[in-house]
Image (tube, rainbow, N blue to C red; front, side, top):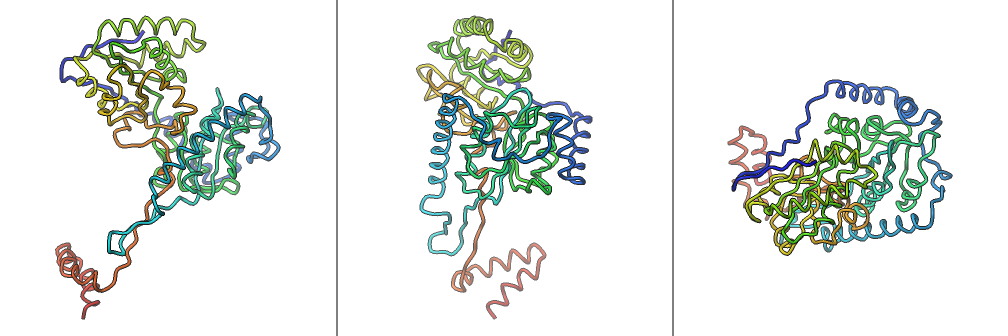
Length: 423
């Protein structure tokens, strides 16, 4: 069961998410990257055959695979999810761009343009489970950003085809080129390029520790959405929170793997006891009980704090991937938590809604990275380009200051470039 720690007023949680270095993992991934750089498609096919698809004949997902049917209910659910995700990110892009994709300082030719990357890479995990939601949640923001080319990689099933449910999701992301390879080899392919897989400018999407180690090693060769750790969530429990629903929300976010983590923050002993009882009842009938039990026992903790203000400080210190806030003062408390990837407010803002249908991408910063990192969104696939177009009248009053700064830095040619224009 989840550990409980009582914090003194002013004391903050010591949430250490540092994972020890793994030289074997680092060496293995470095070898995979080097092999892809050296042998290209041959290395990708060999990796896919070794780890996922012994019968793999080719890398590209063909049109016949994309036509694999799914039942009507699933097709409708995917269509609704795609529509809501696209609407959200289209609205975000419109908010960012306002009246256009460029702006200047008032009365000046100095400004910026906001431009999409040329080609985005999307990674979708496979193996033990298939995640059509990850197709939609990562590729659709790139579409909304205006990215011209989107490349997607995901492991195929053992018989050599992608899962029908992934094919169905891909039908809602027009123009994506999909390839059947996973793990570190897939990240290397999108970062470096091969004969079949085009080199990408940015890669987004969650993955296992091999995927994340490949991202770490290739950072600087390609843009990245972030370095993802295990899934995590925090829960603020008020005295009037619905503990049964809160327990279900916690379990949804530790369902993926035993290294997932849940953090519960409350100032009410009796509410915490009621919540822990509800958690026990929900866990007893959960299909993935063994996975969630391990996550609760080994990685999760409940903090008893002094009051709401102390709770806010603790939540900001945790900087969780997901945060659920319920109770009478939920909106007020949520407004004060600036360090969380996604905040779900109120009893009906279920964690599962955020994972599938709300609209914002479910690919969120983990490991405390919510202190500086954003969820995947249109800005993941956009970048600013600064522009300067000035005439003599705008440069002249700035010339002496430029010359002074250039000479102070010991760069006389910088100064001369200004003087030459006004002789």
